[in-house]
Image (tube, rainbow, N blue to C red; front, side, top):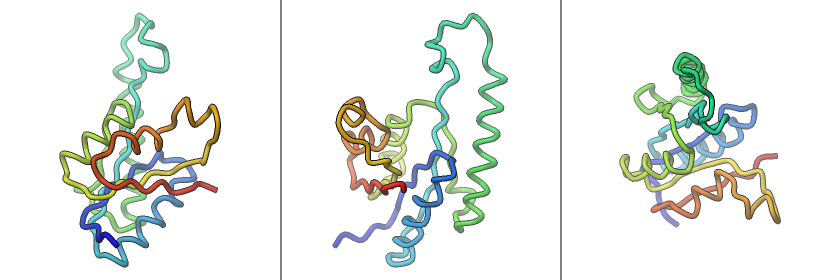
Length: 143
């Protein structure tokens, strides 16, 4: 079995995030791995297709600030130092791939709702991460 030294845990900051964090915690306890928490905030413009003729910078900054506060709370609860808590802006799959390469992680952990059929074909973050990752990916089934 592979031993993981550095784990990137990508969470969406919903009430389901602790399920993913508990799995990461268990792996850390058995392997001594370093955990890096990441949350990707999608650009506000994506929600509107970029067609809104207004400055959304302040709204984006508020979303980033709220995400950092929530991620920090999870970091404290799960013993992840602030230096290993990352909030970034972009497409989740792309940012997770970029960070996993830049930080030389050997495992990415994401949550998965276990979608099937067309929902799976249309894609989910977990599916997108899996198919572009250069390291192992653990998709934790969300109940």
